[in-house]
Image (cartoon, rainbow, N blue to C red; front, side):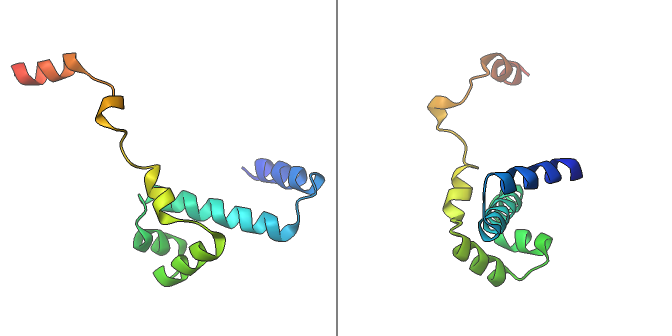
Length: 95
């Protein structure tokens, strides 16, 4: 993992990405990842991050991270788009 991080930093530097932009992007992605892992639950995410929920909420606002956007990726697809496992359903019905 350390090698991947080193490569990413080198790539960002050679691309001319500014330090503050790199830090902002990292924070945004890191918070988003933790929120997704906790299915959008800010209390659990804040606990894992070692911060207060209000601090997490403030950081999300500063980074333009919308909780609705995070939760939208977690929702189940509409029934019409879900795969149908008719064979599995029938085996449950039969006993």
